Amino acid sequence: MSSISAKSDRDAGAQAAAAKARPRVDRSQWIGLLYIAPAIILVAIFFVIPLVMTIWMSLHNWPLMGGHTFIGLDNYVAITKDTRFWNALKFTLYYTVIVTIAIFAVAFPLALFVEKPRPLNGLYRTAFFMPVVVGFASASLLWAWLLNVDAGLFSPAAFRLGLTEKKFNLLATFDPAFWSIIVMVVWKVAGFTMIILMTGLQSIPGDLMEAAKIDGASGWQRFTSITLPLMRRTLALALILSVAGSILAFDQFYIILRGGPRNSTLTAVYWIFNQSFVSFKLGYGAALSVVLLVILVVISLVQLRLLRNPEGT
Image (cartoon, rainbow, N blue to C red; front, side):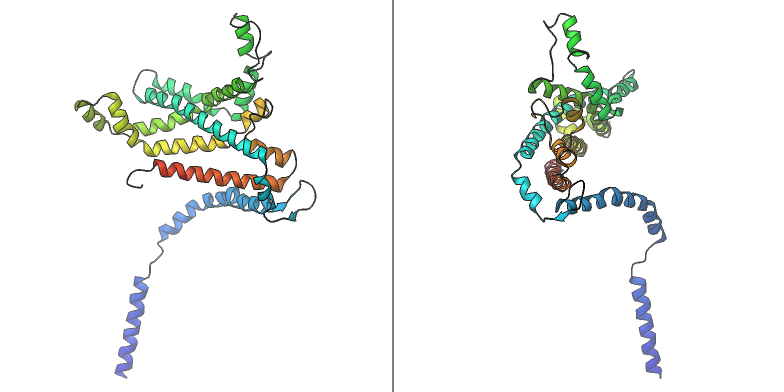
């Protein structure tokens, strides 16, 4: 009896030790999960479920009206032969490179300007950021009026001031139309990038800059050896947001140019819109969206890899 009792005591002790070693879910963890539950639900409703539905649609012949039929990967095979889409993607990448360089060329000097304490600094920041609060569609409508050859501002003003012999249409040929869009996007977006870069500049310790200045480092040396390395993560964030927004460009090209002149400014998203809601090929449009999403994810991962810290973080 004593041996049986001792064995049962040992088993009870082992179970108690195992229960104590087993990780316990703290009440605060459940509270934390409760707090993030709305965000998880929103992500599931507005991202995960639509993404799954888009992939499902891309595997079907899905007209706007009538039933849909499963066709497997036929839509993706058709994309490989869609020269219009690849030309649109080529133009989109070209536009992305040019507009990203232009945005940073304007936003970085502005960030350096407003980051330093000076009189009326709050007014400068507000003025530079103000175009950001205007929606892209509204900004595009505004610039469509400004660029109008007869009723706009630029062409009639230049003609009346004697700068040109006649009114000129900036949207008639590719180069002036393209650069007009670049100027409009930089005006609209540079303030947002400026704020991101300004926060990165403000996170750099002032003592580090003062020490470098005392050691005799020039302004350029401090910028290249201290400012840029310490802003690596901020630059990565600003670059990814700029590139993603540029690849998904649609409003300005649709409202101002309608893909013209002669379809030379047709973007990838514009072509997806055309196939989905003009030609009513929703399944093919979904397949184009999936391909563009994959391209965007790959480009973002490459950017993160190139801009990560030497330590790998």
